[in-house]
Image (cartoon, rainbow, N blue to C red; front, side, top):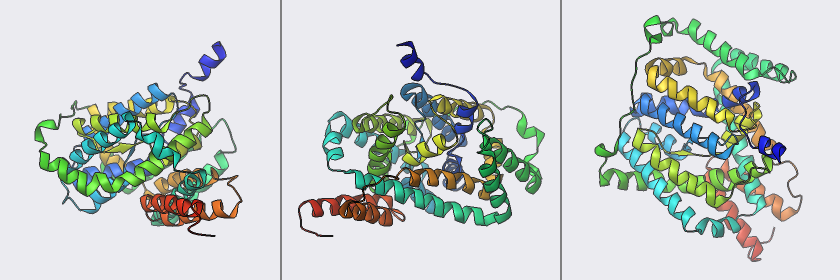
Length: 379
């Protein structure tokens, strides 16, 4: 009994510290884009991420990730500032209400039943390949630094007691300091206390409606496939002693997306890729999320300006290496996939379309699966 209780406790050892930073390849580019291009206040963005990470780590006791929603973030950043912070917050609130209703009503149980294992594996494979392709593009920005970082991780990973990610991040900070000496500014290291502003008073119904139509609804298939169904499957595979259900994760998405916008944060999700990134670099409990969340809360309250400057200065090639290993972890999770022709084709079609659009890949996979089951299509 005591042994089982200990298994479900969070740990805060060196592996958890290393795993805490395993998803930075996804996290940092979106945070920089939201702050630098969209114009969100870094205090609210970092604080909301930090609080939600701490909550997820303490509640789930697994490395349950808190990531920016990719379709919403991509559209907002690509707009070049045309989409206002208020519309993004409106999208977050709409997202929270939608997933909370789907979870509480029990609809997720029915939705989960129509999604088979080949579709799930296709999502994981497609997302993994998409991560690795994006990683290669980031590594190419400085091929030498990228290859050196890649080699360091491969070599140091053979030394089980030595988390490679720390060496790579330190290398990134040193390179950033040499390339942009302006970040070594002692005035930026002086703590300046700031608190996030509550955003509800600046929101209108039009902001929520625009956020729903422009951002929240297009994000839904991606969230359902990657951040709810695939995340649930991957969590239960990695942590069978700490299982979750699609309904529980849907409700969780509702709660976190009602909290984040109020604090000035962005729409967030529990992405399967984030779980892969954290576990790939050593995380085994929710301690990793508590560690990263605690760091972000402190940085947001006292060093929000200086940390954004540092994140902007980190070489993209190093972030690309971290993203590459997260993608590799996702693709490897599909080992042991069914060799039956029909299942194999469903997985490959889902993955192939999902590489460029995960939501479309998910829909295509489910449709193909239904057509095959009803014998409308033969493969």
